[in-house]
Length: 128
Image (cartoon, rainbow, N blue to C red; front, side, top):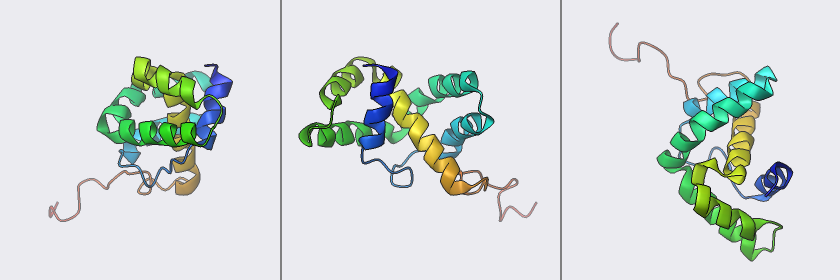
């Protein structure tokens, strides 16, 4: 699967950043890289964060979305399922999905760090 095919497939999947139980603060590291416009930073942040996002809850929604896409006859869904089975969070389609979710988060948050999952320090209620 090419990077272009993975990006096109990711755009077709029914995945919403606000509906997936993953850490928005973790995803925001990728959002910040996207906002910087530095493609090397984007690639590096996806490579480093995708396995964590996958492990903390991205895997099941991705697998379900790919299966729905396959049933709808979306191009490359079958190949993506095989690739995800083989490479998990290191597959091109997962990278494209993580990038899309991070871009969606950035667009929705519009720079608001609290909407990106960050919390104030010290946490409220500690009396500090």
